[in-house]
Amino acid sequence: MEDDREKRGGAGCAITGVVLILLPMLYVLSTGPVAWLANGNPSLRWVDMIYFPLGLLAEHCEPFRNSLEWYVDMWT
Image 1: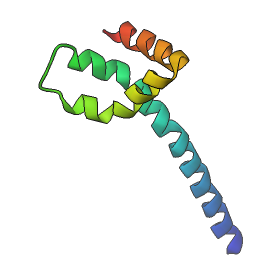
Image 2 (image 1 turned 90 degrees about the horizontal axis):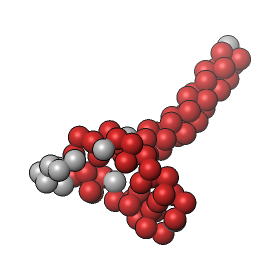
Image 3 (image 1 turned 180 degrees about the vertical axis):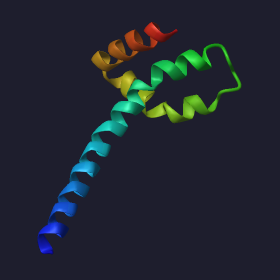
Image 4 (image 1 turned 135 degrees about the vertical axis):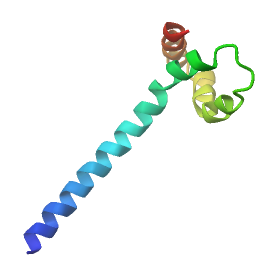
């Protein structure tokens, strides 16, 4: 019985690890589609608040800024 608990615990750790890796990736990759949807729509002020951390990172890290600009330009 203890082996079953250990197996379930291991699976839970694996799922948690996958989620912790995928969520930040999805957050960054969502910038393109959201920029496309929000293009020219001033009523979507929440976009600026949600993506503020990426803007701050882009402001201080030139390689990230170049990559992010390229990616968003592909969508818009």
